[in-house]
Structures are given as C-alpha cells and as structure tokens.
Length: 339
Image (cartoon, rainbow, N blue to C red; front, side, top):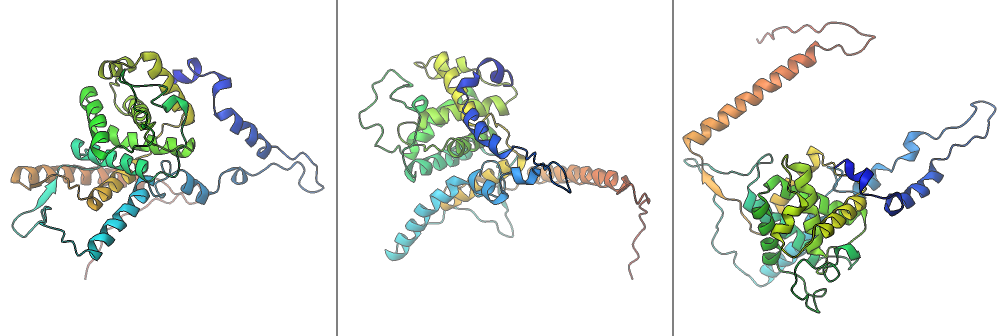
C-alpha cells in the first residue's frame, strides 16, 4: 500500500495539494521582533483543528463522534414507531429469545469475531439508510455507473432516480464477500472507509454511484485488514465485465479522496460494531441466539482465566515502574488487614 503513493499518484493529481496551499498561510511564522520575547512561533495548539470540530466532521476517525448511518436511520425508526402507536399496530409475536433461570441464550457474534451473515445485513442496511436519507446527490465521475459500468448490460435511464432496496444492496455485497472469502471484520472496516470518504470528499452515496463506492471500500478494506489480500484482478473474475485498469484507477482515486488515511483505531472499530448492533435492534434484525451449553460455558471460562492472567501480569509490570525522576521511591505492596 505504501508504494501506491510513490508510483501511482502524480503530485498534480492529488487532492491534498490545494488544501496544503491554504494551510501554509496558517503555518507562517511571525518574524517580527519584539522587545521581550524575540521571534514569535505559533504554538502547535493554535494550528490544530478544534476537538469539537474534529469530532463533528470526522466520525470515522474519533470514537466519541456518533456514526452517520445511525443518525440517518433514527428518522425512519421514529416515524415507524409513531405510525404503529397512532394506528395501534401490534408488534406481533416476539421472535427474540430471552434468557431465563434455566436457560441462557447467547449469540456467537462478538466485537473480535462478528457473525458474518448478520454483520453484512447490518452494514448493507446502513448503506441503504445512507442512500435513502441522503442530503443531496453530490458525486464524482469515477464513481458514476453510467460512465464506468460494472457490467455490459445497459444502464437504465432512471438509474440515478431509483433508490435500491435493501435486498439488492445485500445481494451485491454478499456476492463479493462470498466469492472473495472475506471476513465480517472486513465488512465493518468497509463501512468505516465509506463514511470517511463521504466526510472527507463531501460526497453523497446515491443510486448512480453506490455500487462503485461500495466496491472501492471493500477493495481497500480487504487489502488493509486481511493478511492475504484479494488482488484487483481477482475482483475482475467476480465482476466479469470490469477491467483491471478501471479497478486500479478507482482504487487510486479512493485513496486520494481519503487523503491516504487508512488507519482504523480499535475504539472506532468497536464503536461501529456496537452501533451496527443498535441498528439491528431498531430494525428487528436479531443476531442468531443459541442456548449456552456445558462445552461453550467451559470455553468461556477458560478464555476469562487467560484474560485475568494477562491483566495480572500487566499490573505487576506497571507496579514495578517508577513514577518520575523526582520521586524514585519503590512501591511496597502489603497485604490488607480486614477486621
């Protein structure tokens, strides 16, 4: 991925250059001499973006910022609940299983090992709400399906006015993940890159560009996350009518629009995972639940013991460290006396 910067991107084509020119004015050093302090150098805190603005504009970079897809889905969720309340619509039979004194139900989806099918359903539902509740139709030619078709079939005339259904988005993503043998974690990273693209490039995912934007996000996420990444030519075997040159060009533009920021902190990944679970609960997409068996309980207990031993070792190492050079006093641990 690092070689992409040097061999595939020309300095004149990078979208970062105009922004860097503007920032030079902010980074100029005031060389006027003063009587007391001499040359004035701008403090680094004055150059950085305010934390509140960063949190608001870059939800895919900061764990405390709310995800875009969850906020876009809340409008539909509130309208659905209000309609059911006004029309006295019964929720119907409860399909969700609940634990009792004799049986404990757990799902096999965790933040470190999400369930593949359920995660793809939630990610595609998030993409559906992005398209349905978009602010406008801002796009780029590189993502336009009319100008860069993914198949030889003729694109309908109303392709830019008809919103795709959730099932159509799910089938498209599911086909790519099944053929390329991608993991559920890759689906979550795909959504992070998608929202980062919309924020950085100020774009909207709409009917005319959603397939190519999703494909570009999957392509990049699979290379960053998986140790054995899928090559661009492999996607050409899945999508028969697309060329390698088109895939390379789309990947290069995607990276440029992301400003080559492909880092996904663990806190951001966890936030997206739990927000996807909240989205599933709001839309009655339940994760598969199974009764807790004796074998599964023993495995969970063994994992808990390993984690406890790991944290004990870390705490011992931390206790042996000195706090500062001014106070090199050894820390003595004594047994507590309970009376």
